[in-house]
Amino acid sequence: MDLGLKGKNAAISGSSQGIGYAIAKSLAEEGCNVALSARNQERLDQAVADFEAKGVKAVGVLCDLSSEEGCAKFIEESASALGGLDILVNNVGGMIPGSIDSVTPEIWDTILNTNLMSFVHTTKHAVPHIKKSSAGRILNVSGVTGKQLFPGALTTTIPNTAIHGFAKIMAAELGPDNITVNTICPGFTKTESWGPRADGIAKAKGIEADQVRGGISAQTLLGRWAETQEIGDAAAWMVSEKNSYQTGTVVEVCGGFNKYI
Image (cartoon, rainbow, N blue to C red; front, side, top):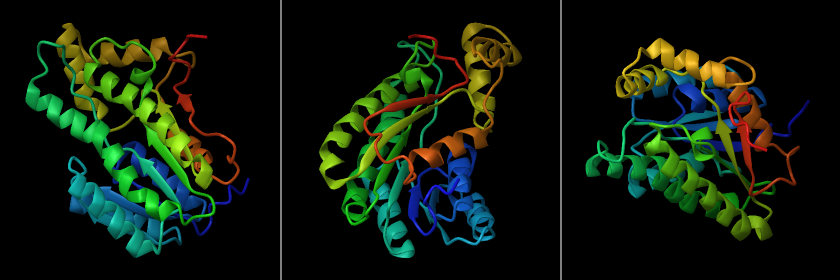
């Protein structure tokens, strides 16, 4: 199916690896030009080369999205290099396992600035560009911990639930401009970053990391973790022209981890 993404311009934050890379890959395979952000120049350069090899324009912006200045830099350099923006995918973030007692003020500053405020600042600076598009799309990547209790995930549950509220508000504000704003909640996905996360959760619970991974698999209806490309392909649909009447929603791509009705 042609998703109508050929020739569109997309900025995807946190996209040199993991889910962000998979989303950029799915978009590039549909003919969408992509702007990537990362804090590691070597990984960023490799990702840009990978997507250029698919015949689309790809640019990399080295920046720290934990500050508004970094978010503004990402958007302005992306829009300038690509010649405008049609799509924004907010993807940056991560988990630091802990409890209300163990998470320090410094950790909270890091988590909230990166996992939440980066979405706010990047959206703020992207909206003027996206309003010029005939099919503007904003997609936020949160996670299942924003929808269902997962003990030990305090530092993702709080920003993820806030992201859902922020997306709903922005969907209302931008609806008159024909810009859709949605959120995708990936389930537990085979990414490099989940190695230390599983270790951290295991330490907090006094078990082995393999037990953490196996326990999560057992909680899904499909009995497994997601592949990154499964998330990337779902995200590509969400920002496509084929998905033109869905806004303000939270879509779970979690293999049945969330079981409420």
